[in-house]
Length: 257
Ligand code: FES
Image (tube, rainbow, N blue to C red):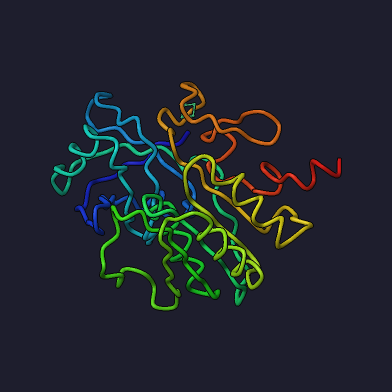
């Protein structure tokens, strides 16, 4: 695991989401949407932040990391870290999202609290592909002003109620070449079932889920990130956090086997 020197370069908020800007040019080129990094505050090992930080707004000199709302102490540390605070950053870690082909149709689907985990992908894919970003609203986090999304991305919302999201995904998946989702741990299996209705031969390489819940040590040591997959369990920090839905959660292939 490579260590890179970084500095805090400010904080930004999108609704209730907190992002911290890391100035860290040496890592920028190797980061892709879906990767995560670990960090510790210098000059000591304490506090080691013990949270997976997901980069977004990737730029050559600096990038933002999302600080999850349920990490109170860490959130307070990073929220108040003044510009210039030194950090050691470790990464990139995990399996990132794949690149999408230019001009392809991309459906990105997130439950509202998980929007930050898809932002990097939406920003990057939006530069060359046709992207629809569908968010299941739970009423807690997103601002009304959505100017932070790339202008090329079509933003759609659906309220959280029975079968509403599945109906939207079902309809949009007939248009999409790729589907990317971010949500709670049960989402990949749930989305696999919906997609297998639309694409009876759900093949690897078309649909991917990021499962960020519980990633803490990031090293396969704490078992907090275990996800139920088709054949047992997998640690999201080691096998994910991005999983190919057909390979890991698809049922059609299992039935045919
Ligand atoms: S985060 Fe500790 S085992 Fe995955």
